[in-house]
Image (cartoon, rainbow, N blue to C red; front, side, top):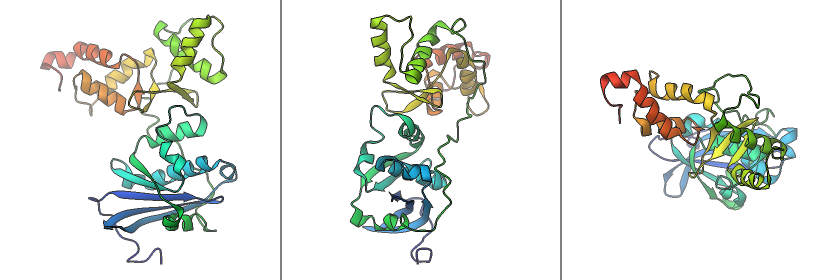
Length: 288
């Protein structure tokens, strides 16, 4: 019955999508729905998968977060670029995205979920029966684990040799110190007491995911911290590539931020780069 009309409908692209997800001790259940009439949800897509052995050992919050990541990856072609709603029966997830300090798997999944625009609503279990039913099915997709790679991870990727202490640019030394502090929990030996305190405070805005530093800005979005020797290539790609259009400093800065990259002087550097751009100097001011 779950796969037969009138239960399943084709998506109505002018209406908002709603993702109902629930995770039991053994499986993930998820359903993509739309509100076609007042208080009447119609299903667009059903999905279910058994948990792997490792996932069964996760905490309740981690298992529910796995369900959210599984859902956005499953329905990515429906959800990307649209605002939608998550409906969960685990209230801790309401504060997951807005939590200030995150570590480990939760931090990585939060960065991945930030590519999507959604609200989270708590739904009591008695009103969450479809996702709950799917999470208890004995059949389902194979236990492959949640796919939590970043689809755009190769965007603006630059291959370089690891820098030694003698070759690290002055402006990059603080990134190196934060990286070491997050990886080992210890500040560099050369630091005095006050410098160690400043390092601990500054590190609160960073997390380390697979040896890569991410910074959480005032907007609450995690972006990869960029080193000085990457800046010129990123600026060239964001300003001069075929799809970029030689925009002015602020617009170019927004494109860099939207790509998930960040350094403290991004706007200043884009304005400087635009002034040095031969194309912009020959044809006039950059595009607003």
